[in-house]
Image (spheres, rainbow, N blue to C red):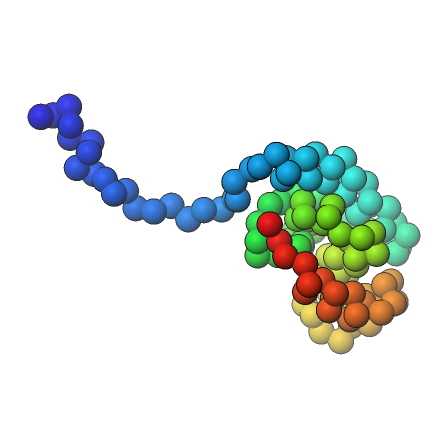
Length: 132
Ligand SMILES: [Zn+2]
């Protein structure tokens, strides 16, 4: 009887799923993203004259395209590799602007517009894309 003891524990509390299942497609996207996005982020930050000494991590989630931590690290979604270059740069620049402004206030938008003219139209275009 003791041997079956562990079955009485089922069902276990459901763990929150933090990552999505890897498929052949997402594995390929991740490899592309790792090879491209960190360098592109540093390039865009340097061109913008914004100091970026943090890390770039590649994430796979359905909640956001990117994020910026208060420690100055940037997370980017591997799905960015599916977007056209202008749209991808817009997301990266959005996160770079958070290195200066940790909010979405008027100064943040003014900086983003100066680095990425027409960014509101790009934001609207991004809504047509689905995170996988
Ligand atoms: Zn933001």
